[in-house]
Amino acid sequence: MVPATPCACVPCTCEVQMSQAVVRDGQTFCSEACATGHPNHLPCHCSGSCGCTCAE
Image (cartoon, rainbow, N blue to C red; front, side, top):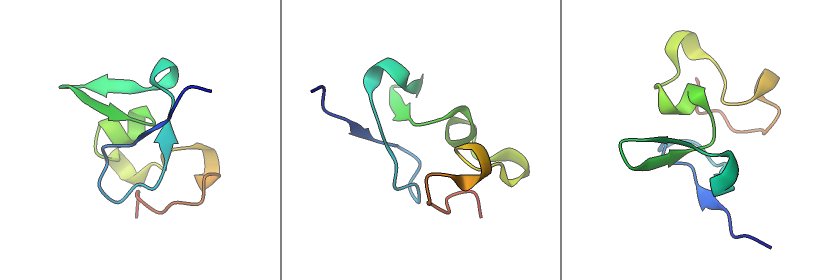
């Protein structure tokens, strides 16, 4: 199994496989929302399904 990497969004608790990561400026994020700083408070995954509250 390929190890997961923690999302670089500080309050995010998600981990992401490199094959599915969004990479910006050398940092690895779990989603486009985390990579762009949660504009309009968009959650990192649909309906906050991952359980973290990094968009709040």
